Image (tube, rainbow, N blue to C red; front, side, top):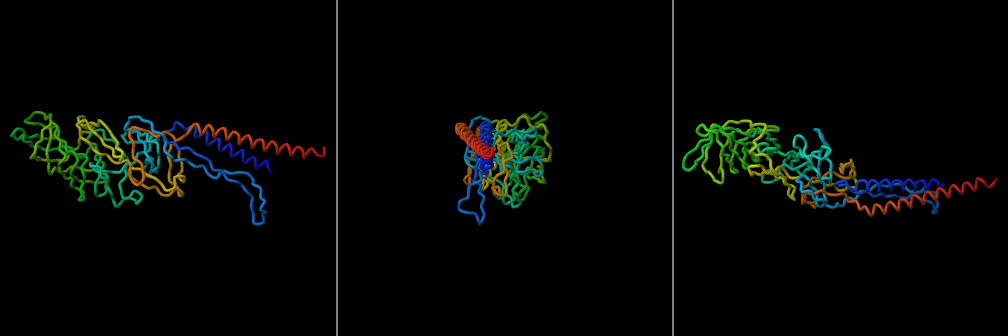
Length: 407
């Protein structure tokens, strides 16, 4: 009997060694959380058993992950992020019915379509926002998100590729369609100057509750001709109003109802007018004068894009998540976890709210492995293995003595 009891001890020591080896192997993995083992005594019990039962060994009850934060490594790369405190980044696997996972590994990249993804191709999830950073809500969204709209984060290459969102609940991918042509008249030095066939683009606007009125954002006027010569000026305005026709996944700029105050080369022009507005599609290659020049992420998770012409747009706010029982999460590798029945449902949260941490851009979270402690664990596990081996050897010797009594 002692032979089998000690065998459970050997198995326990081997399991302990495997867990420790895995911890050591992942000491350089970003966002990795160390694992510990929990063993319990095996006892054969019954209603008729005496109070002098002898244990029958040990068994593995659970492996427990330690979700305390790891140290910070500075990288100075905008898409490298860490959660400074509690909470997880939310990433979604590819496909129409992709699974949302939780991760502490914030080493994000961009794919061929400029989606911000993990190294294994999972899309970083953000809240859809207005250009001023307010998070959109929709009664059509699931209760888990608190009624807020969650989407993949996609970086625009040019200003005319900025995504906007509708207060009516639609997330609208502007792409290259939010554009028009028209004849713009500007009062320059007291003289009315008309730009014929100018290209007008609108990005980062807020769609009103009527689903058609667009306000805010940045209106850009380029191209066209002035008195037969090419227009070389670029006019911008943040006070324009427009009419937008929105359909599923796209929108069309159908009219410019107000140009606001145009700015060019440090000068402001009020009272500008526009005529002969017609919807148009911008060049798919984008406007190189408004190419993306910088991405920054605030501690509140808001992702700001800055373009070559100086205009800025908030592309969304990084969504964080958590569960009531973190040790109920299912590990899927690469410092990713998915919810289970024992973890509780996923709770969507904004950064630096509801007890969750802030977002630190330009830094990564290292594993929370303490190598010194793990090396000490190796010594302890070796002693446990040797002790159980000795017990098996002793039991074997005792059986040999019994077998040799008659001889």
